[in-house]
Image (cartoon, rainbow over all chains, first blue to last red; front, side, top):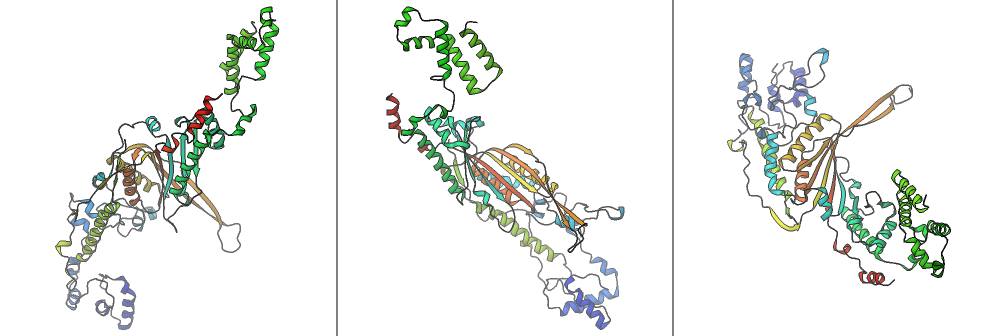
Length: 336
Length: 202
């Protein structure tokens, strides 16, 4: 039976023909076939030749491309783009697969595993270099003055972060791609004390005290550009609103204060009372007004130290150094 | 400080790749035909003009337009690739890092976050046989490439190149952190005069 079948599609027909004629003739099929496979049509002359001598058949064994390849060929011409693995085009003795019956992994010819796995034969180092050479004219250089993150922050304080997704699926769109995150350090904005405190209060959870950063995450609009504009709008509104002083802000109580303030605090009153009791007023001082006495007492160095230590304790929390300072200040104040 | 943006027609980029692929396709198709020389008498023989010699002859020189529009600046560009096969991600990492080095980009960290395994336990049979189950697992491997301080045009070029050569079965997440100047309307408060007055009055 002729083994050089080029069209496997016609195989079932061949079997039928065999059953009918009881002669296995391949060529008659090829002649009468209505398929245009582009494959060679055997002529009658060749069929007779094959019948006579089997030696001629061996000469027609196809040479694979690998045998005709030169060692110094241009590989980028063989695999210019991503293509499946072709055993006849890759001159490597690659083996892949499970070694059945404790044998060896199967060879590359007819190996489905090698075809299934994505290959990088089109991305050899030489090919990458060629591609990058072609791409270089489209690139721009990074400004040399901004070589560290600190300098970037100094000149460009606002950071906008967004994510892009590349994947295959029923739809190529990922709704998370519309999310935009704006990060800015409040120290880089033009704010005074009141504006800064108000801004922190307005931002609420979005402000991080440790790093002094305000983070605005927007995802309410369907498009990325819209979310970007919305984030900038929010920042603008926050900024301008924080500079405004409303009428009701005058009613700010001690409970609303962000940090501890020593003036007009119970601690201050206690200190004054204690000092007055310790050193009862002399005649001259009694004639002076109360306010002046107070001012004088508060102006003392020990009192200032005590004030500093108390403020630190309340604002920063209880640490070793803070407690030590408090102890020293109290000792000096009470002249122990 | 404003760098001008190169509106690279990515169409040109795709054109060169299309040229590559079309030529390769033609060559492959032609080669297939030319494999059976002696037997083909009726089908046309591959003409020498179609045989690929390895040179890319450009029909036209690509025009690069440089505009004065300031280019976006990215402080960090993070490319995270996800796949089921670790070997594929290894090769892809080699490709992406080499491409970055050839284009002159500053590579930050290149690391491998720990893999994620999702396991399912399902019934083996269609009906009854509750005691006999079958277990499946899906492993997702990751690879992260960080690039710092890259301009918008370069980022677009690099990302397009990387994404066009993304293998099948691999997904990518690109996190871009752009740095922007403080816009003009945030530099000074709108009611600047009012606040000044309040400051002077006790």
